[in-house]
Length: 464
Image 1 (cartoon, rainbow, N blue to C red):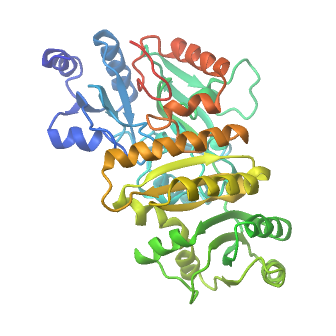
Image 2 (image 1 turned 135 degrees about the vertical axis):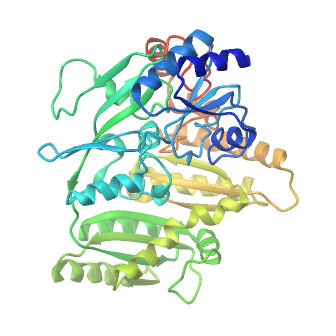
């Protein structure tokens, strides 16, 4: 792409903010993955939908790929520009546009941070329940692109359940207004749901109508220490049957060691193999007594070795940090990440099979597990052994991921639960989706992105 073509974009949109400095290209051209060298053409920061449409039309004319960019907290290479693409950052499109108190809909721009959206909901006396540790930096546009889930899926579901409408700029620059906030709409295909989870490959989300709900009842947090892997599902069943749970998270002793070293406080005096964080309704004495009864039962059965129930908001936050601080504590080691899911009923058998693979294939690496037992989503982080070259480490991890992918296929699972396919998991898509499904997906992309400019090379290879 020549400088003259970029000059043409400047002439076309004289008010458009463009960044071309080397530091900006590197900063905006990558996400939390660090495996690819970013080589974007430039960074465009539009301020409104009209500018986005004009950028797309320019990109079509000049055959330039567009990589959408929000908070760039993704972990699958979905927001990486590796081949001279134009990065379209929604950094400036970050406002709350309006609130409808009757429909309880918040209209927002895609660059709005998740935490800012949550705060806007609270200002209306309501609640936006999708939540995870990167809330302060991830954007709602990125959440929509990956159908993000987080820690409370067990009660509230994924992002998909909370998006009432979308405005989408397609790969030809056309603006679509999808669903328009309707609760019921049986008039043909719901294109809104095609866009959610599509990783920006079908178009650019430029506005969203987000559903809000009532603020949750008072809750409490319980941290439990477990002696063995098989106890995880026993404790889960006891909590699900005896409590109103909104989150059920687990992590291993290796995860605990990293996060405590990073500054989290461990209330136990000794190490345990597995840990569980349970968030449960605690609005009255009966609900609080139920939590104690569940703990006592789990302890008497030998499923739990120790436990603590939070006595204050500050203590609850400290307990949550043991789980939510894991990713940050691992970041300096640039771990290789797997984000997989299986049906909840398959978790015990799958985890055992996965554990055997890792013991056999990763004797030299530090393998850190954690995840959302309540929705079947497990996160695996592999930390490179000392002295090993990065290229050899990635090759080793790719070899084991292929084995993991084969195992997931046996359990009818998915290679990506909530991080997306991006560049990282593209080669494993065929293990999760059939040949016929992928062909239909390609056909859908061809219709909405006929020139192949929307996040090219992500999910599957496209040709322009």
